[in-house]
Image 1 (cartoon, rainbow, N blue to C red):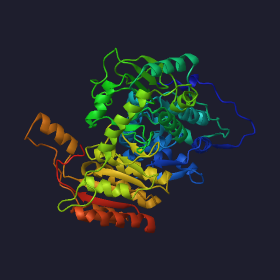
Image 2 (cartoon, rainbow, N blue to C red):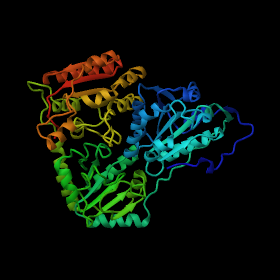
Image 3 (spheres, rainbow, N blue to C red):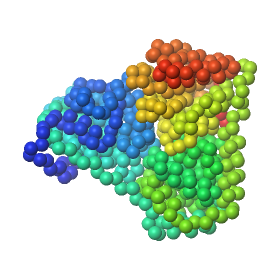
Image 4 (cartoon, helix red, strand yellow):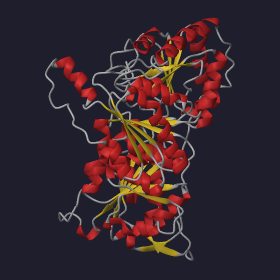
Length: 560
């Protein structure tokens, strides 16, 4: 939506407050809001903000492409209660960053993108790299604001951080005209604006309690990025105590841990057949942190009967993206909902235990690797995932972008906590390496693994240079099947035998990793996988370098 910023109340300042440039005040306000790092591609349009970062406690991560910077900020927003922050320059820089905004919008991730702009006095003259931020971003951002009055710099930042986190989280764009941010202003800071979390009313919890008591086959579905570790653990404990099952929205596994007796599998594209069937079989579906949208309902086909019972727990009163019946809505963020849920006096029903045990048994069978020991012949991803899982600590994290290679992680990666799986639910390719860099920087002591496809990897593989520069140490596994696999699958279905526009010829990715200063190894035989993994993990742990395994696999071998 287009903002008329002059209607906002002006923040009072003290006459004896120190004076700073608006650009420096912007940085100070970000510090006051808890921002720990910002992902940037520099530009002359916002040099005063970069100067403000010079002595700031905020770590400035200089990226190699604006798309990579935006992806890193978006991933950071998924891992923290503070919005991720990226900074890019006008025109081409803003265009390159747009892919991260779309990811933030569809994934409901809090993120603020600062864009340097042409000087105010040059506006509407088709100046060098001029563009209209409102025309570009209004349809895919929660708010678009341009700082036209320097004295409102801190206020605008506070509004942006609030807007990104409030309601259904998402991206906010802040335009910074080059000349405006250089002006001196009073340096008083606008305080953070509290974000409402909602919660259950008496009527809400009574309605949910009655629905659960009348159901024999209830199913919870967790999703979204608006949780905390405490909230996820609280829900898991409650589900386990009541012998209730929970599935995970596509690419958000771990909220209810992989090993929990209540976890019954992922729901989304490429889902196992049983998770589609259980959406229809359940007599009460409770969505927490997400809604039954396009991907969950398999293109608006599953769970469309208006006689079905669906309870939707989301802070978004508009239910944007919802499909199918709505029996009851509870306006609440996940943590506030869990806080109230655990207080409900709800005896467990014997039927719940049997229902959950059946679904859990199906998930255990589905997620147990068939091949755990290397065999003769070409390298295989199921061998890689089995060998990898044996070497992972409890708090391991996985990131990935889009493509059929991601299904190996969906099926086998043991995500054992909220935000242990970071991905792009808008199906955006090129996300794997930037998200892994962001995760490794935020959690330097954790094992971060990214599963990349050969087509996806080269879209932002250059950010390995960023990993090397700042000491990020992810393990990058590139599954090389010499094709855009997902598109090939659709092609074979709709145009069988007519392969067109989907085949790839790849470089040696291991040598590429070495050129960037990391460890790289090429694996072609299944028997080479254990040794390659051991060497890669040793390079990370003993040498403090990122590591890449280039795994050459056969075409058309899928996770399921």
